[in-house]
Amino acid sequence: MSTTPPTPPATTATTPAPWPDLLSAALLGTERRTPPVAVRAGQSAAAALLDAAAVSTVRRRAALRPAPAGERPAPAPDDPRPPLPPAARRRLALLLADRGGSGSRRGTDPDLTELLPQWLAAADGRGYRAPEALLPALLDVARARTDLRPAALALAGPRGLWLARLNDNWKFALRGIGGALHLPGPDAPEAVQRLWEEGLFAERVALLTAVRRRDPEAGRELLATTWATERAEDRLMFLDSLGETLTPADEPFLEQALSDRSRTVRATAAELLSALPASALAARMAERSLACVRPAGPAPGAPAAAESLAVDPPRACDAGMQRDGVAPKPPSGRGERAWWLAQLVEAAPLDRWTAHLGGRTPQEIVALPVAGDWQTELHDAWCRAAVRQRHADWARALLGAPGDPGQAATEMAPAGSSRDLTKLLTVLPADERARWAAEFIAVHGLADAFRMLGVCALPWSEPLGRAVVDALDIARDAGSYPWSFSGVMGLAERCLDPAAADRLEMLTAVADEPEGASPGSGGYWAEAFQRLVGTLRLRAAMRAELSGEPS
Image (cartoon, rainbow, N blue to C red; front, side, top):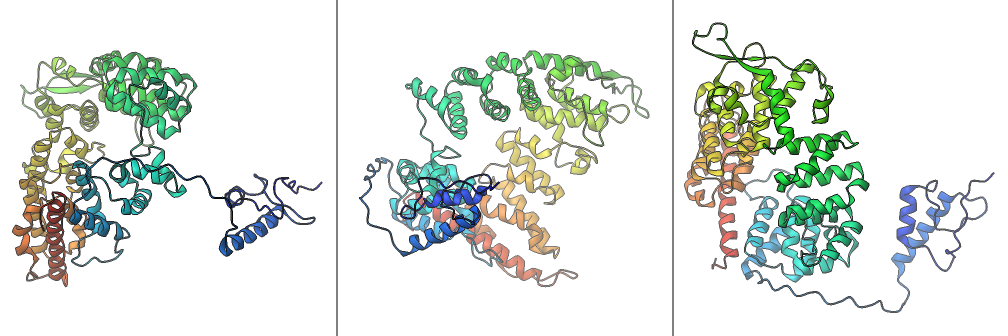
């Protein structure tokens, strides 16, 4: 019996199939989709499809047949925002033209692709609109770089969205994926409900996030209307979107989600509930955790008056623990009891430990020795709890003093530890975070500081910037190659205060290479610092241009 697909009746020799239909059939394969072409006797569907594609290609290259004019698109909407100053407009054109990057060694020229995000953020912050002539290039950048989409589409504004409707390559801008999706407001409840029920998934996530930001209860009620019929992966994403605006009133909904048929949904609901210290789940986890950790006598070798902590992890993972989000099976290489203990402690409210351990402060609790081999496990779990609960006092205690040589990174995060010092750092206020990072770099150098620098507020404070530059200067004096520090140097170009450019001018000269230095390192360092100074001055010029100041 022949397996040749039937010839679709709509396709004839004089009415070629649309190119998108041919492309779709080719991508899916003729076995999965019947190609919209005529198949001659003895010819395979694949061959007929290729023949039709060849003919269509010739037609498209040759000319278009005269046809009635299509409907004229509606005029572009007005954008009442002020236009860019002329110098800033020229700068944007240069940044967009250079979006491909140099690809290899950069020399002393600033990397414009790394400056574009800052320029867009600054322009959006001042409320400017994009020049109409640059909208196509701006949309192309937003298509190529998802990290730039929110800022690029915000600058493009309503006229960018209007233009995106006319080009399939820019359809992403209409889906609300990191962009300026126009969502119905609170004065249009019917439109909100219609978009929630009929919109694309990205549109629904954006809608839920927007509604939650203005009215958390209304957003939760909107989610509840379709919760039972959502796919498991969609329920998971919707739950994640609740985390930004989590409130105690969300507890009943999340408690119900603890019985969800999806394990990942249950785990996410449990994590959200544990971020609410007054929730019933947090109380249950505290009761279990406190039963596992108790004050004990002095540790071996400690003074008689010193107290320690005794740890007795759970001996089983019962049904109640599993319902509250405790995964019973540990990862490979992890003991069951340690795995259960970690999950309990990281979900317990940290403030409960003070009363449990005799009114001690977080610093005093962290300083207590732990009997057995449980200290790393216990402290790692407290670190995760501090991040989840955004508890600054516990974060300070667990981070320790960066200027103390005894508190080196390896000391604070010993071998086998899963704690993340950078995440702990994000819990601190921005100015304190910068001070801690600056002291850490001054004592320990840049080897373990890259991720810490990435979470510090922009531009870097003067003490933090000075600590980074001093550490780079020390590395240069040691004769190291600059590309060993290229990541930090790149951060410095983006994050140092532009006002530091004049102070750094002295570092642009070629320094004498110390004995034993890497050959040519002095010239490479001079080049790197020249690029740094040039980039800072360019950032200062960009800022002045956006302010309308004369150049």
